[in-house]
Amino acid sequence: MKIITMKPYAVIDYNPLVGELYGILKYNTVEEDWEFLPDIYINRADAQSEVDELNQEAGNVTITFP
Image 1: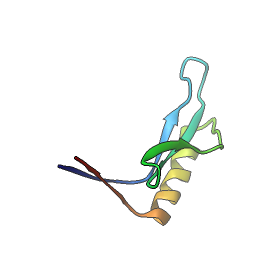
Image 2: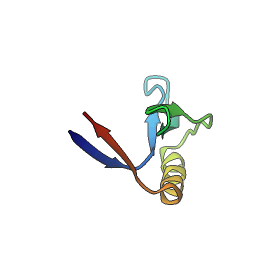
Image 3: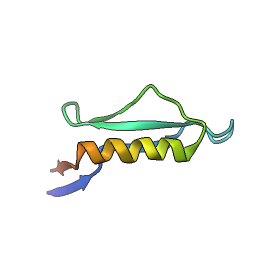
Image 4: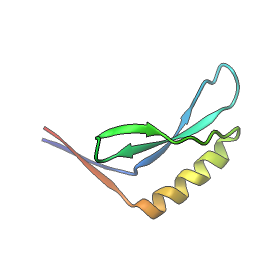
């Protein structure tokens, strides 16, 4: 069995070939899958700042793999 503890929010690059577009992924513990949040950022620092704030409020997520 493998147990991972992580933060539930992460920054993702939408398409680095087109330009700097960043989004936020959230790990959904009920569905056990990642989901995209609707906001799009043109600056990675802004996206990371939002992720840091969300992660601080959310705490950690623990995932158990068989």
